[in-house]
Amino acid sequence: MTTQTEAVTTAEPPVRRGRRRKQLSEGARADRRLGWLLCAPAVVVMIAVAGYPIAYAVYLSLQRYDLRFPQQAHFIGLSNYGAVLSSPYWWHALVVTLIITVVSVAIEFVLGMLLAILMYRTIFTRGTVRTIVLIPYGIVTVAAAYGWQYAWTPHIGYLVGPNSAPLTKQGTAIAIIILAEIWKTTPFMALLLMAGLSLVPEDLLKAARVDGATAWQRFYRVTLPLMKPAILVALLFRTLDAFRIFDNIYILTGGGNGTYSVSILGYDNLFRALNLGIGSAISILIFISVAIIAFIFIRLFGAAVPGSATGGR
Image 1: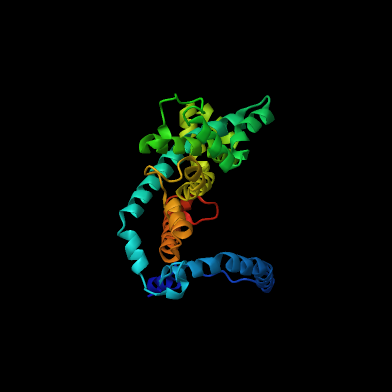
Image 2: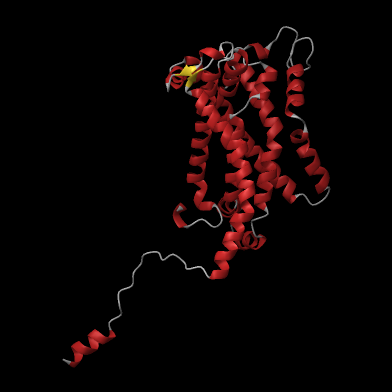
């Protein structure tokens, strides 16, 4: 009987493993309310600036709306989306956009990492090196695109012969567009990755060197994992920007010879054909595509973001 009593009295009560919501003090709740109040004006402005155009674009995408005949506008539901998604022009533009995005961002990431290491590790003339590397990014995109156009124009440019016209052929034109994108935005990628390199403690690298790790092992096993937050930001920003490419294509080829992107396709329908319904549907599809890309990146790299829970939750 005594043994049973001891067993009962010494047994620990079951522990509930469920998450308990942390109870905030009155001061913490007051600080949170103050934070929301301070953020409220900016949130209202952002909703007014970004939310209203998006909502109005959705409204227009559900209309048959030709700007030449505004009195004939009427509601047609999702017919504009069906017309766009069943059109070969949309799928061709999407393939061209994805090719430019994937190839340019992949090359920019590799070159940007090399430039970031160069700018971060340079001891002498560090300011000069960083200035030279960042010059292309400081040039206005339209001005840089005109420079690339002149360089590849026969009888004007110095990169082609008099009988060669690479901008008139789809393959070479897309390659030049990708090259112009890489030249212009690799410094931006390098700048973001250099900020990530500063997050890597030198003590860890020295400890890995003492343990016999090679330079590649230190980079792959130590540097890259600690740089994941910066890599997420760099890849996400550049991928979204590259997917919405417009200015380089508009200047170099005007979207001709099969080089039009989804943004060029939307521009042609909105401002040349004056078809606000189809053009708005294309814009909303681009917005959805960008949101999907952002979601994928955050799911892949979300666990690396400081402050995120284990396992990406």
